[in-house]
Image 1: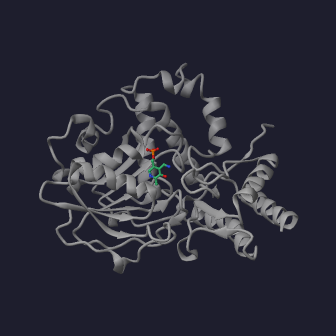
Image 2: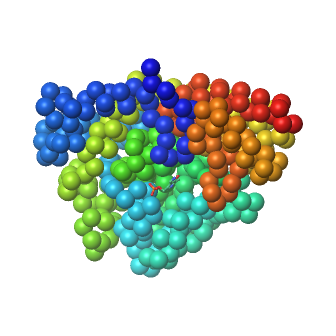
Image 3: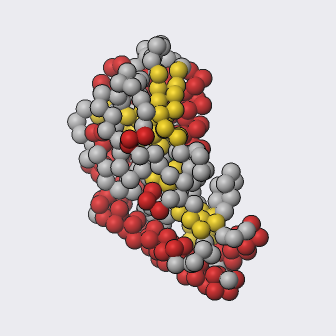
Length: 362
Ligand code: PMP
């Protein structure tokens, strides 16, 4: 059997063993073609079936209503930070951003280069421990769009419910929690997510966009930076990242096999609880960063008493076969990213490690 570590990387992150094995088995001869999926034209029937299957599965799993398109882009979520304002921040209008962490700041910084922006609410004070309440969001009815980050990968906070924005288009960066739980897509005008957490390997970005927003987009934007280009040609205007989309299709089939988003949500709650309970039961040996009411199910952030002890903990973790537990370089501490593909057993093992380490170092 293969040796697999307890992988808590924040992204690129763990993928289910079964889909890696399937990709391996199909690598030399995909579906009887005598080629790998990487070697097949993106205009062929064989590839198109994979492409469309990925789109259909995503629509089915997320319950995407009619009137939305699913698009595959490149450039990561970071390119979306710029594409959103390029397409939808019209002159004379202002876009609102909810600041809940580093990625929200980066999105804001790109929009600021392209048009008028304002901060609709911020949780920066206290170092992004919380998520602003719906009542705190301050924006007018003529706002171009309101941008939120559904899960804050670095700080470990997650929106527990989404705001009702009425006629103001709601746009969300869901890079680090898409597919982790069911939610109502119809609240959103646009959703984007880099693939490398819950969707597959890095290299493709999924965009879900409502048609009325497409109609309003700036037509002067260069072709490859317009959502319209991807929507019109089913994301086949030019060569898409075919292997990545194939991997996304395998990942989505796996999500379905697991019972879909409701089943994964339950399991994600159980997995995260194993680690949060170890924090809460530690009498302050481990201190969680996020305010408990907005704790992320995907990224669990915590600190120990000092950096020496944190280093000792991370060393012990490494010895015991854990990978990826260091916090983001900008905040330090520890972070366990427990995305969909991270097994329950890995979270259980982490909990045991935390108990043992505390006993030995208290
Ligand atoms: N948004 C969020 C919430 C993220 O977690 C990340 C990456 N960790 C990004 C954006 C940036 O994504 P990319 O590297 O795909 O540009």
